[in-house]
Length: 291
Image (cartoon, rainbow, N blue to C red):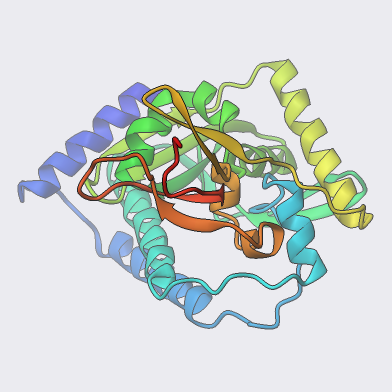
């Protein structure tokens, strides 16, 4: 079944459910979803606070500096109270999406597989989301902004700006099972819209992904000297430099930015005239930015 056909079938199921049209939903499918919910709740609510750092499928695509910080035991920022809700929403979206795929008669050939991936002398472990037609797919929930400005750019956009290491993660899941990379089933957690973003790496790009992962794993496992992967970026407003320097997006999302960038500040854009200006993390910030 092609992805376009599957997407159409999934939309049809969603449209019927949204309008209470007749649709057979077996007790077996509901029971399976309930079982998956319980597993997710146990995972999220009973995390071991003393769990030791390890490289795993979900983090091998992340920046090496972030992994080095975590392994070293550097102090991480405390997460906001809503973090756990975001995590549970992500789990719920995955379960709902998988249920709808089953109702859409998707050719689900695997999922929730315990995967081991041997690379750079290290065995990386993880659990995949779902296989469609023997290709490995990840289900991702995202903000409306990311849905419209990131995922809408398809494979090329994600390849060029992979802030959370999704490409390396999917590559590991697929390669560890000797399967193809399928892609990502992306859900806007605000609007409920769903998109299929196919992974379309060329042979050269696959080699680049592997080389990048090998480099990251070797540095982390060998306790190589810490090096920042990113530098502050000049800020522009109306195409003119403001004199401020922003932290890159990767650093803004990192739990260790206070350690790596101790003088960083979170401020509204100084030049903005908006009633609620967008906030950014700054390595250098001046109230009168253009002066």
